[in-house]
Structures are given as C-alpha cells and as structure tokens.
Image (cartoon, rainbow over all chains, first blue to last red; front, top):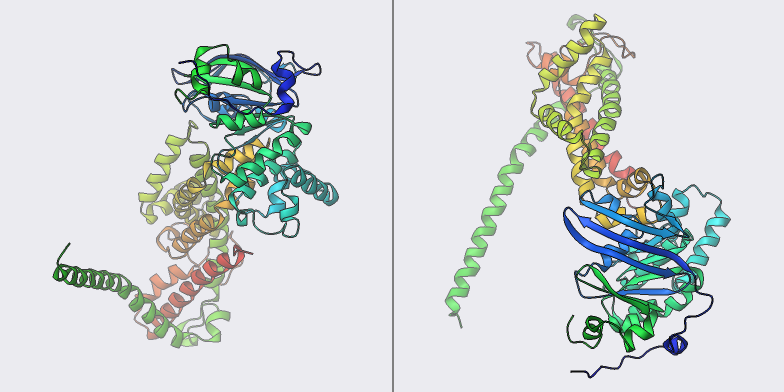
Length: 276
Length: 279
C-alpha cells in the first residue's frame, strides 16, 4: 500500500523541496519540551519545534490530537483554564513566555489570536471592533486610530468591502467578513505572531479562499501559525508543517517535504488519506 | 397514512390546549391588572398639587401632603441604589468572571441568606450595626437597609446575565493583550448591559416598596428633611401607617402614595430602558 494521493504544492516551495532551507530563516518562537496537562491528563506532550519569522506554519492532525491545545499554549490562553497546567518553555525572541515575572497580558499583546468561530464584539461597530485593542490600551488620538483602522482592514483584505460603512455593527457582516474583521482586529495591535485556530472551518468555500489568499500577504507583517483540519489548506498556505497525533508532535519540516517525502510512516498514512 | 379524523381530533386538542394556556395567562395577569387598576383609579382622584409640595399637616389643618415622604424615598433609594447596586454588581462579576475565587462560596452563602432573610430582619441588622452605635435613626441607616434588600437581587441578576455572554467575547479581548478587568468592564459588561440594568431596576423596585426595613433604621419623620443624617420618611412607610388610620383623608393619601410609588418605579424602569436603548 504505497500509493500516494498527490497534493499540489505551491511553486514557491519548490526551492525548499530540494531540502535546502532559505538563508533568511530565523525562528520567531520556539517550543522546547512544551507539555500541557488537563488535570492529570496530558493534552499535548513534550513538543519542541521552531516557528520561523514571517513564515506560515501549519499544525495539522486528526481531531483531538492536541494541535489546538499546543496553539493556545503559545500565547498563554491556558492561564484562564484552572485545570490546565503548562510545562516546558515557549520562547518568543529567545525569551520564555512562561518565565516567572512575565505578564501574560504582555505576551498576548505580542502574540495575537484568531479563533475558530468569528467572534466580533457584539456591541461594537466595525470601526470600534478594529480599534478595540488600541483604544482599551489607551490610544486616544483620532488620526492614529483612523490610520490603524484603514491599515488593519487593508491587511485583512476587508477595507474595500466595508470602508463606506465603518459605523455599521460588526455583527452585520457575513461570516467570512466577520472572520476577516477579527483578523483586522488582531492585526491592529501590531502583534509579532498571529495564531489562527481553524480560522476557516466555520466558513463557506469562497470566504475560505479569501482568507487563504490573505496568508501570503499577512506573513510580510507577522509570523503566522495556523491550525487546520484541512490538509489541502495546509499544503496551499503554509511554509512549514507540524503533524500532531494523539498529543504528540510526530513530524515537523518544510511543508513540501512533509507532504511529499514524510519521514514518519504515521505522517504518510495521514496525508495519503489512510485515516483522519 | 393516518385517517383524516385523527387530524381533526388533533386540531381540536391543539385548540383546547391553546385555550388552557390563554386562560392560565389571564388568571396570572388578572390580579395584577385589578391591583394596578384599583391603585390608579383610587390614587388618581386623591392626587393634587398639595400632595407633592406640602409636608405633613395635622388633619384639622387639611392634612397637608407627602412631600416629606417623596423626598425621603428618593434620597434613600438613590443612595441605596448606589451602594447596593455597586455591591451587587461587584459580587455578580466575581461569581461569574472568577468562578474559582476562594471567597465565592462565602459570597454565595451570604447572598442566598440575604435573599431569604425577611426585610424586617435586614432592618434589624442595620439597627444593630449602625443605629445603636450612632444613637439615632437616620436616612443613611435606612438607605443601608434598603441596599441590603437590593444586593442579592442585583447580584443574582448580574451573575446570570454575565454568564450568558459567550466565552468567546472574553477570549477575543484577552487575545488582544487586554488585562482581564478591562475585558470584563469594557467588553463583557456592555454586552450584558440590558440585563444588568434590568437587575438593577428589579432591585430598585423591590427596595422602593419596602417599609419593614425602614422601621428600625430611617425611623420615619413627619417634617420635610433633605438630610440623610436626620430621620427620614418614605412612601412605603407612609402607606403602611396611613392605610390603618380611620381618617378618610389619610386613607386617600395612602392610595395616592401607592400610585406615586408605582409611577416612580415605572418611570425608573422606562428611564433605564431609554438610557440603554440601541443606537
């Protein structure tokens, strides 16, 4: 049973396919033996992997494999779950975000997150949704806020669709637009890393495509980590891929290599569609 | 295929059940309509300008009005709303947003206890804690007793509506690098504002109608006073006292006081709705 289902790999990855990594590659974040416990149960265990700056890293794997759990450990979202406990290190620019004295609020300022379901603030307008972070962090000057709204919505590829109704409620947008609004909202505080937890799983194919198209633009400004159920999506948008299975990182490498020449037979079984 | 007769029977049964539901609703609403109707009709005929601008006068001087009670009610209830509202809000936020906080079990017991405690005993609590040490009845003590009436109502309502705000709103705020208190005050609370306001209004309405907790605290006062440091009269106290008096003038004043109290609560509710309307 060796036959593989061929997956399309973007041409820009042809270089990486040869095995040589690009020269300007530097890690923005790095997980070192990161383990998340829920009570006594291990959610995801002993994960070590780099997250390269200005690249898209995809985390794939079947449901319940721990990829979302790992993602949420990267900006200390587990701090709010009393039963969750994190061990190991997660470095951001060489600094452990779990070191004593590090404020989780600062961490989340620098590492933004987009969630599975679009979650605009229900009481706020489009404009106010985008600047919610800046405003509540104390930015008051109108020209700064106006500029941030336009820049963030441009980066999220939503500006042209909403520029004439910035005062409309955020909830009045379609699902795909809401998700791009959430991306704009996360970008407005200018994070270094953007974590995306299955950002297109609640969206229709057209909205999904518009968000995928965004990715290559986004990585010019931020480092992106995306959890996805959809292997084709990972192949299309990511530069690096980590494959998770039953709470463990099985394989990590350039996307082209993981999808065409996986080193681990379990990865191969998954990407060739034998399970998952 | 079901026979047609069965369908007819089901339609009839549906009508019958619907009729029962309407009848039940009417039975519930009827006493309310009767009470309100009686209060409006009887109260309205007893209302006049003197009622609002004159304080108490003896019967042989015409009986005066209830300005002293209206002023007292407003002063004590607004202060109670400030104190009880803030305490209730704080407690509700703590229970909903910090579910694992160590003080929560105590808070819950105290809140349940307060909720079940007769209002008269709430007055006695304040009597023991404030009136005895101060040596006299004051409007301040009355307001504190009314605040005790409000706290559990506001607390439960706040906790309930905050829990209805989706968890994703909090996560979205936290992921922007906002401190938790900011997320709660600026994002979660506004999402639940209509419910929170309703809770505050329920508490206000309940406290405005209480006479019992004021007996040992505000003490009542026949003179007009604008100071919460004095003894203070309230409409609810007046209704209780005048309703039992043989004089028809006093009885009419009690009816009028009931109407004014009802309108006050109604107005407060409408004002709150108007202030939080969707723009």
